[in-house]
Image (cartoon, rainbow, N blue to C red):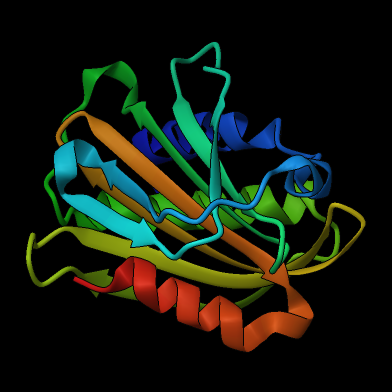
Length: 187
């Protein structure tokens, strides 16, 4: 576990930490008929969310992290996409195992501290076929927003930028959650 990855994960988690009112935001969102296109890391990690998601920009964090929260009121699903500079001007390869493995380790440690009932279900190492971008996927459960949730977190880095995508669904909607994650990971 490197200091670089620890700082990087902490910065992204800080950007996501202000999102405790997920259910309140989802309830406020208006249903939308168009799809939402998401592009991160200079287009190396891009996906299209299905109809029903509404985008709401997140306030920039003091560290410069930016992101968007996509909510689907019907399914009560949230997708958070955040990006930030890698600390200290460090530069990583598109599939930098040391950076990604350290980021996952730090992420899991931070989640266990922040969420008392955090339970890691699985961890995967993926490479996108079209771009060669390395991704790490962590599937977990935890209590968030007043209830038990199913979570999939995707992490990637390229050059001086890092990205985190978190899919949060109701535990009772595993089929819908898995289908959404598959859509996001589709090349």
